[in-house]
Image (cartoon, rainbow over all chains, first blue to last red; front, side):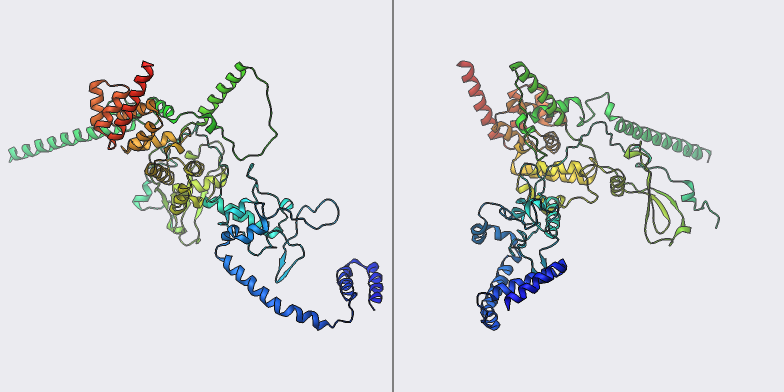
Amino acid sequence: MATAIQRVAKDLCSLSPSIFHPLRQIQRLSRRLGPSPYLPHSHFFCKAASPQNEDSTQAAEALSRYNDRPWDYLESEEYIERYGASPVWEGYRRNHKGGIPPQTTRKTCIRGDKICGNPCPICRDPNTVIHHQNVKLLQQFISPHSGIVYDSTQTGLCMKQQKKLNEAISTAQDLGLLRFQIPYVKFTGEDFYSSHDAVGSTPPHPSLNSGDTWYKC
Amino acid sequence: MAGLSSARCLFRSCSRIKHVERSRHTLMRCGVRTFCGGAQDTGNARPQFTDAAVQDILSRITGLDLQKVFRPILQELNPPTYKLMTDEQVEQAVMGATEKAKKLLQMPPVLPERKPISDVLAEDKMLEGMDTAKFVFTDITYNIPHRERFIVVREPDGTLRKASWDERDRLVQVYFPKEGRKLTAPLIFKEENMKMVFAQDRHEDVLDLCLVQFEPDSSEYIRVHAAAYEDLDKHGKYELLCSTRHFGGMAWYLVNARRVDGLMVDMLKRLLFKDAVSLVSLFHMVHPNSESAKEAASQQATGTDLLKIYAQMESQRSGYIELALQAYEQTAAEGSAA
């Protein structure tokens, strides 16, 4: 039965690449069914039922704990255990074909309720939230020597999170939470006078006071 | 009757003469005010920030720490270059660096607040209700200074008026953008955010951002600078601005406000006696009618005597200043004896 499915899959593969994705799923299914094909399907669903509920409640609690203050997570034990002193994006590897990665990362990791395989360093940890007050997290994505924000090809962030990161960094710099290099202003050769007619007070036109208008109406 | 009328004529002529005299007085006073830059009677005219003597004193007390002026900044990094130099070449390089540092430490201008623009050019009731939005007409000729640029606003009710200073700054930034300046002021200049930044000892950053964003005679510029100087005075963190371009402005602000004690004590703690003496001389220059200034002028005092006179007459923390002076004189005596 499984071998028959595989043969059909291989034939269909040669037809067109658009059927490739669901066929991969069929192949995966056949591989799963391979070692123990006589286990009823309901067994798998029952197994996942109870721990799934506990996980979701735990995840919800964790989310709610750091929802209001996402910067507390970076001092917590779970963060230190998971990442240590290295930045959040260190060790992340993108999955792509060939030696040269695409110039842009994926558009987004989370679409609705579904999360993709191998999500980016921010999306894979629901507690790491990009917020303009979460200065420690933002600083992990800025070079300490040149002040330039790392590109998403270096850090592996999806485009949506990279955009959010850029906006959060500019807001934090605006509020004064993040340091940045301020351009030097020269004051030579500029006279700040207010005696010219454009900016000083000039006597009003006589027609203003007399009440006559220059047009006939 | 004739006597009365003649008396009335005499009275009228007298009053006219009085009015003429009064107007002449006011004219004289106006003249002195407008030409105060080139006033011959220096005793009456108040010393300005741009005077050579004042600038000389302020640049001297600012100091010149090359390590602080040329500290590493966030910029695009290149691999380092190495040069093999003789001692003379090193000295020349250091001299060149000090010249460049003096240019970098050029003090930003301190100007009085600009008067608001409120001139109406025309009131055309015919145009009332033509549109719901204002129209702004800007002269974008390239070769004229921004202060000579005509910017006028047509209101929905038909009045044509000159644009206010805020509108002017915003529109000049739209058509002739300056590097680093934003159309709306960054939120760092709000009270709460400034307090938070001052708590992190980043006064220099705030002042640099203020120089980039605002014009030197705008109310925002003056307000931010005053807030920064007040905070520095309150916490005694004068060395944050030492050997930066803002130190002169801070010293000038404190001297004008007659609150030089904190700065004086800080200088004595860091054993900068010459700087303290020049600060006192600047104080006497700006406030020649104060008691210590008159005493110093009468005694022709110089050096530590000036400090003593200031400590006795003017300062509230005279005890500390006198103690520091005594310690300095002791060390000087020991040094000369040994």
